[in-house]
Image (cartoon, rainbow, N blue to C red; front, side, top):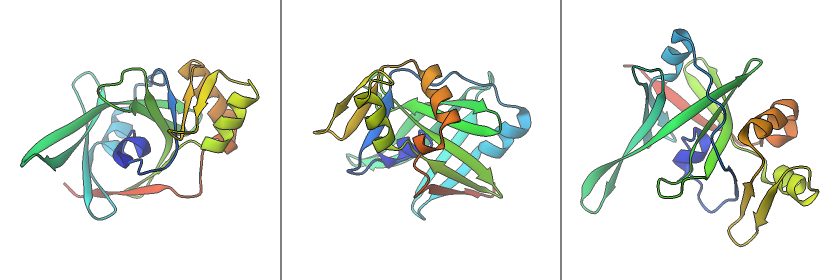
Length: 177
């Protein structure tokens, strides 16, 4: 599941807390150059390979191959990229069977690598508890579910660097194709 959080989405959440929004961030159409930098085959932690492609309408998708029940399965998600100033954000559906729960993060592309940071759970917990934004904190599931519209959450994180947990990025390396 860590695959989904980082790139939306490319991240697996393994026993850690997460923050979900009820809808994806507003989609920004990326330039052909930006699409070329993002599209490709990416390696995470030397053992997790993900593929990112843009369809003919410019909509980005991410997919990975998993071995389950004695056969290969594709796990794919639609990605939603949003730009604020020079910062790129991504959101994606958390679970295919749970519409209305999207994960999000910030991405920086640099020299064939993608650094992905997720939201700071403590920051969003405080925001909900102080009623600065709408949402619920489920301590049993380690989840903060935000009800505030995604566009407002995007504005909040673009103006407040404490909203993103910059301590431990996931680092994806782009493989040559």
